[in-house]
Image (cartoon, rainbow over all chains, first blue to last red; front, side):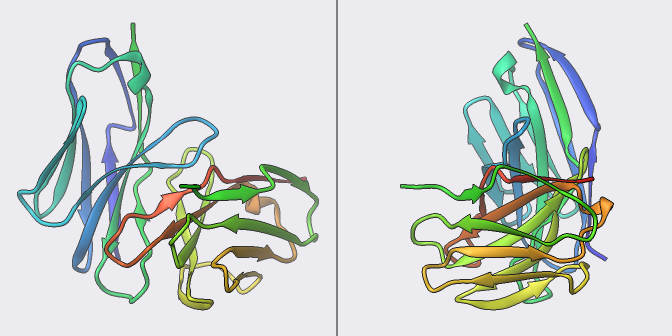
Length: 112
Length: 112
């Protein structure tokens, strides 16, 4: 069964304190791994897609990396506006549809 | 470019009733997926439509059904509502299988 586990469930950082979020996955063939940001009362906002081990993507203070079993979202010198829930999702290659399998997310709080 | 829009934003129903939720996909997108997100959980895949045909279904009972129209907008119908159906219902659209899904802000459904 395809499965995504994110850790930690919640993370509190001081402004400027860098850290990483983890996404471990078990999937029957990986077509892609996605990172989303979700603010309270809103839908997930797309951040990155990673397709193969060793791939890295960057956007402002965020950097996503991928291995064969996990992905990391590195946050460098975060600001309070980076506070949100970060969701990881995998797109399995089997099944035919374009479904995404999501983890439960990591709730990030950045204090000023 | 108009993003994914969903209506209504909030809805309150009682057990046993039926509900229809609507989604307008992003311009140029021909694939629509529906997800259910319970509080504190990641989104769970309900089903997907591609060019008006169902293209994959998650572990949801038949009382969850859908439609996609020629303009690629979509509806989610839920019959015989149960208390556990209370959740945020998210619609996502994409242009093809290798592109990320873009989400709307969802419909918050509460069952009394």
